[in-house]
Amino acid sequence: MVCLDTCIVIDYINGKIEITDNKKSSFYMNTIVENEVIVGAKNKRDLATTNKKISDFPMLDIDQDIMDLSTKLLNRYALSHGMSIYDAIIAATCMIYDLPLWTHNKKDFRFIDIELL
Image 1: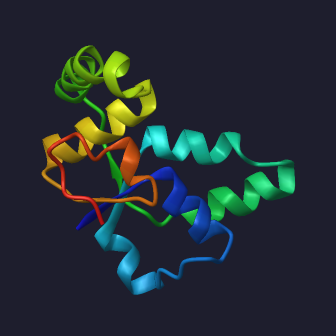
Image 2 (image 1 turned 90 degrees about the horizontal axis):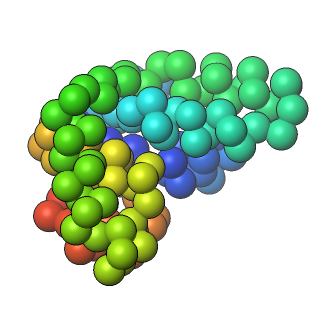
Protein backbone atom coordinates (compact mmCIF):
# COMPACT_ATOMS: atom_id res chain seq x y z
CA MET A 1 0.00 0.00 0.00
CA VAL A 2 1.27 3.43 -1.02
CA CYS A 3 0.01 6.99 -0.60
CA LEU A 4 0.13 9.06 -3.79
CA ASP A 5 1.29 12.66 -3.89
CA THR A 6 -0.42 15.13 -6.22
CA CYS A 7 2.44 15.14 -8.74
CA ILE A 8 2.12 11.36 -9.21
CA VAL A 9 -1.65 11.53 -9.73
CA ILE A 10 -1.19 14.32 -12.28
CA ASP A 11 1.40 12.23 -14.13
CA TYR A 12 -1.01 9.27 -14.07
CA ILE A 13 -3.82 11.42 -15.49
CA ASN A 14 -1.51 12.75 -18.20
CA GLY A 15 -0.36 9.23 -19.16
CA LYS A 16 3.22 9.64 -17.93
CA ILE A 17 2.80 6.92 -15.29
CA GLU A 18 0.86 3.72 -15.76
CA ILE A 19 -1.09 2.21 -12.89
CA THR A 20 -3.11 -0.78 -14.04
CA ASP A 21 -6.69 -1.22 -12.89
CA ASN A 22 -5.85 -4.30 -10.82
CA LYS A 23 -3.16 -2.32 -8.92
CA LYS A 24 -5.25 0.79 -8.14
CA SER A 25 -6.52 -0.70 -4.88
CA SER A 26 -2.92 -0.59 -3.56
CA PHE A 27 -2.50 3.15 -4.18
CA TYR A 28 -4.24 5.59 -1.88
CA MET A 29 -4.80 9.33 -1.78
CA ASN A 30 -6.53 11.76 0.51
CA THR A 31 -8.93 14.57 -0.28
CA ILE A 32 -6.11 17.13 -0.31
CA VAL A 33 -4.51 15.35 -3.27
CA GLU A 34 -7.93 14.89 -4.90
CA ASN A 35 -8.72 18.59 -4.51
CA GLU A 36 -5.32 19.73 -5.80
CA VAL A 37 -5.80 17.58 -8.90
CA ILE A 38 -9.35 18.85 -9.46
CA VAL A 39 -8.22 22.48 -9.21
CA GLY A 40 -5.77 21.81 -12.04
CA ALA A 41 -8.52 20.93 -14.53
CA LYS A 42 -8.59 23.33 -17.49
CA ASN A 43 -12.27 22.96 -18.43
CA LYS A 44 -15.36 20.83 -17.78
CA ARG A 45 -14.23 18.08 -20.13
CA ASP A 46 -10.82 17.91 -18.45
CA LEU A 47 -12.52 17.87 -15.05
CA ALA A 48 -14.75 14.96 -16.07
CA THR A 49 -11.73 13.01 -17.35
CA THR A 50 -9.81 13.78 -14.16
CA ASN A 51 -12.66 12.65 -11.91
CA LYS A 52 -13.11 9.45 -13.92
CA LYS A 53 -9.40 8.57 -13.74
CA ILE A 54 -9.10 9.13 -9.99
CA SER A 55 -12.41 7.57 -8.97
CA ASP A 56 -10.96 4.06 -8.58
CA PHE A 57 -8.29 5.02 -6.08
CA PRO A 58 -9.22 4.34 -2.44
CA MET A 59 -9.42 7.45 -0.27
CA LEU A 60 -7.79 7.85 3.12
CA ASP A 61 -9.88 9.72 5.66
CA ILE A 62 -8.42 12.88 7.11
CA ASP A 63 -9.38 12.84 10.77
CA GLN A 64 -8.55 15.05 13.74
CA ASP A 65 -5.38 13.07 14.51
CA ILE A 66 -4.07 13.86 11.04
CA MET A 67 -4.98 17.52 11.37
CA ASP A 68 -3.32 17.73 14.80
CA LEU A 69 -0.15 16.11 13.45
CA SER A 70 -0.15 18.42 10.41
CA THR A 71 -0.29 21.41 12.78
CA LYS A 72 2.73 20.04 14.65
CA LEU A 73 4.58 19.57 11.35
CA LEU A 74 3.77 23.13 10.28
CA ASN A 75 4.94 24.54 13.60
CA ARG A 76 8.21 22.68 13.19
CA TYR A 77 8.85 23.03 9.44
CA ALA A 78 6.86 25.88 7.89
CA LEU A 79 9.40 28.57 8.67
CA SER A 80 12.58 26.51 8.44
CA HIS A 81 11.72 24.41 5.37
CA GLY A 82 8.81 26.26 3.73
CA MET A 83 6.37 23.42 4.35
CA SER A 84 2.90 24.12 2.94
CA ILE A 85 -0.40 23.31 4.59
CA TYR A 86 -1.18 20.76 1.90
CA ASP A 87 2.16 18.98 2.19
CA ALA A 88 1.79 18.87 5.98
CA ILE A 89 -1.60 17.17 5.67
CA ILE A 90 -0.30 14.72 3.05
CA ALA A 91 2.73 13.90 5.23
CA ALA A 92 0.59 13.54 8.36
CA THR A 93 -1.72 11.18 6.47
CA CYS A 94 1.25 8.98 5.56
CA MET A 95 2.53 9.06 9.12
CA ILE A 96 -0.81 8.18 10.74
CA TYR A 97 -1.58 5.40 8.24
CA ASP A 98 2.10 4.27 8.26
CA LEU A 99 2.33 4.36 4.46
CA PRO A 100 5.18 5.38 2.18
CA LEU A 101 4.63 8.41 -0.06
CA TRP A 102 5.18 8.15 -3.81
CA THR A 103 6.31 11.60 -4.94
CA HIS A 104 8.62 13.34 -7.39
CA ASN A 105 8.95 16.23 -4.92
CA LYS A 106 11.16 14.56 -2.34
CA LYS A 107 12.63 17.92 -1.33
CA ASP A 108 9.21 18.85 0.09
CA PHE A 109 9.23 15.87 2.47
CA ARG A 110 12.88 14.78 2.97
CA PHE A 111 13.11 16.35 6.44
CA ILE A 112 10.17 14.28 7.77
CA ASP A 113 10.40 10.70 8.97
CA ILE A 114 8.37 9.04 6.20
CA GLU A 115 9.44 6.62 3.50
CA LEU A 116 9.60 8.32 0.10
CA LEU A 117 9.27 6.39 -3.14
